[in-house]
Length: 198
Image (cartoon, rainbow, N blue to C red; front, side, top):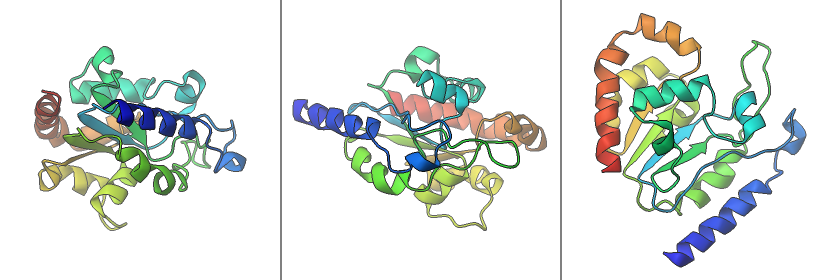
């Protein structure tokens, strides 16, 4: 266990020093991840927003508040790396796109880092996949499958994966159009999280 902790610490130092896509990042590199070798729940998100970039704390924004509500977790539990790993598809803030929302996660991150880091998470019981980029990478989905369809069919991916929409402000509109999410999916999600952390 001590050897695994040392190798994870080295991997995290390497992540902190990553400059692979530095030229493409408007605020420069600041990788934001949370990993502990004993984590039983893994949350794969998109990329840090501007507020998260500034604080260096993952999911430290309104989207994180909504995600924690969906999961049924308080902040102390959520930010306990011994229990929960937070691994985005892109580790650094990608900047604002033409539509006014954040750009997609940088495509270099996940292929370069995920497999290496996942080797340090042998205790993970459940992986929550937040948003289309995580769905595509981990569920092997291609463009034809919508986030709505993937989330509606969440039970197809159990017990290993649990797909969710991204909890940005846009999800408020999405939830109004899809009331089954809060009525049916969120209770199942909370049960799955409790079981994983038990």
